Image 1 (spheres, one colour):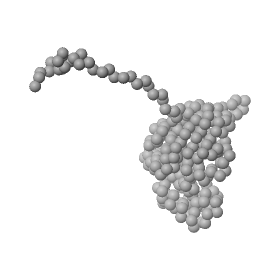
Image 2 (image 1 turned 135 degrees about the vertical axis):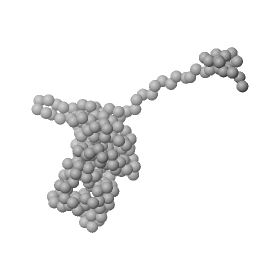
Image 3 (image 1 turned 60 degrees about the vertical axis):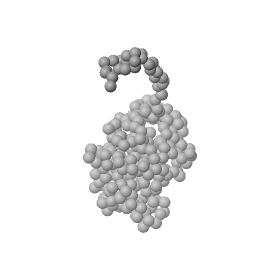
Image 4 (image 1 turned 180 degrees about the vertical axis):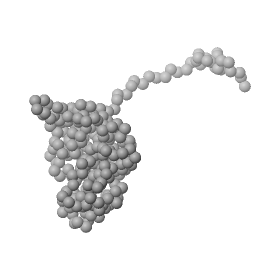
Length: 251
């Protein structure tokens, strides 16, 4: 579903150049939940923005469903690719339900249909009771769930989630991760980033970002297989010449 090939991303900071992504390659399959852990400025958020098509790769290539994302991002971003971060960039005015319906309303879907879909996605995300609330009233866990619900409105093939557990307490964290696990189980490819390795519960693959380098994406090389020594009758340690264990009486 998602393929990154040797992607490098640089940012100029005054007279210095910071390498946010350093020759990163990654594959995420449909139905797979992949988690990337990294400290601040490790490059994890840049990785997700490039994977979602929000930023174009400066070097390398990003493929989504067999298409070059640099050429097709306008037709897939916000539709076939769902991106959510935990800063809930709401549209002007409106309750939570209207915020969640916005992606379909922007595509000229009938308001009644969009509202019905929004209610279904909020229920799917476990926050149906938030539909008529003001977005400013949401706690961090509710913000994460509402953001996921809005990203799922267009039934994306890839869901990219930046730091869903940020600010979320330990009690609410595991159910939130279980929600993302269930989204992947339904066939959607899910790529998420977290700030702590302990927040990668339930993922299919856990990787880390360190100074723009993605680690753990490739399988380690298999060790050489050494054949077992065949036992020689009467010569194994602990056996006497008759093949009986020393010190054991016959029956």
